[in-house]
Image 1: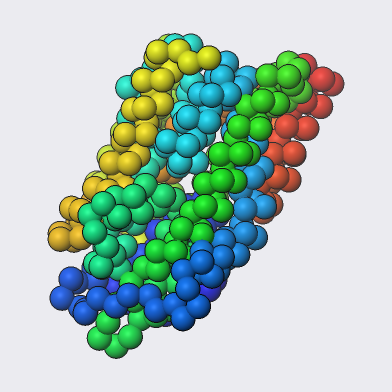
Image 2: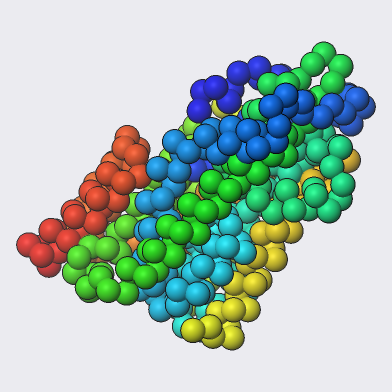
Length: 276
Length: 99
């Protein structure tokens, strides 16, 4: 992912998720440009292909995540249709892992929806950084484009648009290229989670096989991807401590909300120094 | 099969996720976010993730604790698949031999 860090401007701020490290522009003013559309000499179809090829190597790493998620969802009693529906409509892996881990029958709607919002709140920053690069799009096209704004698609789309930056013009998002990225990731995610959901319920007793450790392992890997140094991790430690204490002392799922609020309070009160 | 509460939860998730995707685009492009708000926003996903797996840390069963320790160690230096493999196999083996 190093190539995404090229051409880093001072105003850029790092947004991190999963194993992806990405830079985002948070303060690019609207006054900076005449919009400039992507000029593709060889037609939109080859742009689509270029996008698909750009994301292809990454999909090999994405598919196992999808399989693990789908399998666990199947074991928790979600039907194949429900898994496909969740991954197809929500299309944000991190929040789906959280939802499935918290899932019971019937699901706690407000807890899951609330945590989904918090996990995906990083999209707020990501969407803001794409805005100066989507000025030529109609509102309808922009809304559709944003539906597919997953971490990887955002990072590669931004990278490509930025490569066409000129001194007085902000490089605009290439829609066909973006479509190629989206098609690859969306298809892979939907297929791998669905296959996982088909296989999951056929696996034996998850406790005996140690399969209950699969999810924590995935979460820890994602957390490592979010790592930005010891100081930035203090809210996490507080979250964990409070959540463990709450889990041991009261029944129900209050530990999730309680621990999260505690961590965010610490982040707000002691912002610390950013280390990157 | 599609149950009503499952469907409502899934639709709720889809709604708020889409909200985070369009809200940043439509609102934040005109206003820059303050430093504190940005820090809180960036801390949020990690806080949620760690809380969700907190029950795993709240165990007194030795084999679970050792398996967890090995998994944490693996996560800091290995990619996803090997980490999962170490987590799952160490939990299974330790529980089998030490209860």
